Amino acid sequence: MEANHSDDGSPQTPATGNMTTVSHHYFGDSNASDDTISITVIESMKEDYGLFVWPCSVILAEYVWQQRSRFAGISVVELGAGTSLPGLVAAKVGADVILTDDSDRLEVLDNMRRVCDLNNINCEVMGLTWGVWDESIFYLQPQVILGADVLYDSSAFDNLFATVKFLLEKSPGSVFITSYHNRSGHRLIDFLMVKWGLKCEKLIDGFSFLPSWKASGLSGNIQLVEIGLNDARKN
Image (cartoon, rainbow, N blue to C red; front, top):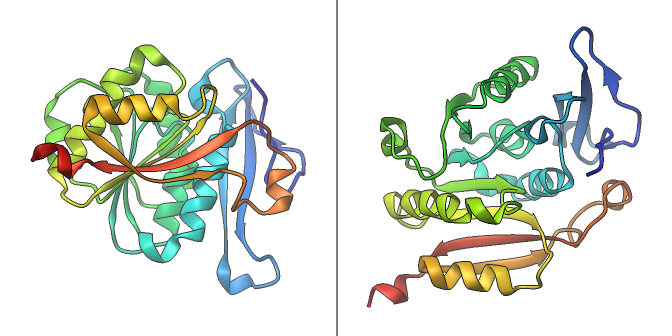
């Protein structure tokens, strides 16, 4: 795994106290100040995957930014949000965002709240464990579900897609947008689509829309996919 630097290539700023660092992420044209945003993220230097900004998160956040007119005024849930960069960008451009991560990961959830306060962003933070049907999930009706690098552990796929399909069925016309490291060609996505009665609505190379100054600091074969319900399977 690789540690992340700020999007502009500058070193991260060490935070005081508990082995944390602060990274800064910029979106838009720096020469057009009325059409740019920045997000500050608190990351951990400890071995906790949920407290790093990984390349998939940078790519998904950039996609949200470039699709910002689509996100204004809609409801968004980010699954496995961790440092929450994509969800924070969605909130910045006008979406009503709920950030979620595993209910048992209290340190990650607390960090999400701190990052929201740091950026003066009003997001709800909620514990949501994939495949667990507690009361909170029944109130969610997102128009867009976000998930960065959530396809890393095959043992969690069934719980993840059970949760995704449940949310898609609750909100007709909704879509799941996820970025992931493509380690097996398109076979993984094809398999999951068939198994869960879903369809791939868009599949693109994660670097195809990334500004060159961001792409130069990232590596890997990263794909971004939009997934919806396969309505034809109901017939």
